[in-house]
Image (cartoon, rainbow, N blue to C red):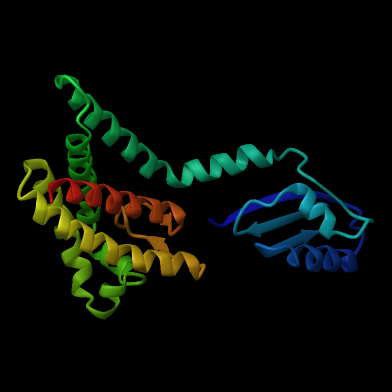
Length: 239
């Protein structure tokens, strides 16, 4: 996840200082861009992942001191992550809450039934957001999905496959077939996600369609892996 933080830097007195600070900070791993201003005594750093202040300080010559000043690194990092992935966090929270409440009528917690209801909620909600802007979803999906890259029509079909799987889990339609299809579809899906994340591609995740601007990240991998894991457990429980 790309993030940008602005720091206070003392010791910058000229253009040469600006260049030194910039070149030093650019040498730090995961730093992708640096903007330095001697007028504001500041450095605005774009990074792929959070970098500790001590690491940034050690990269600078002794003449310069970098500080957060009015900037709280930890709180901003947390806020940045939560604000970015809030839609997914809330969706998983609500699905978990509702499916858990459905278990109150049982004498004991039925794990398999809970997973079935969770999968139904997941596919129905996620397909809903994809269908809100099917064309926008398809345009994002073809950028990383291994099948959609070769067969663009699959990007359009995929949203309806998710809808069908949601209905199948909700109605308990042929559990064996439903879980097999889920395993195949999600395993294929996660391949493209893994390739994009491992190659550090900065592209939009299409998991919630084009409604939310979510970056492709390990969160997407966890999301797909969770669906694969649940369907695999239910599949093995059936056979």
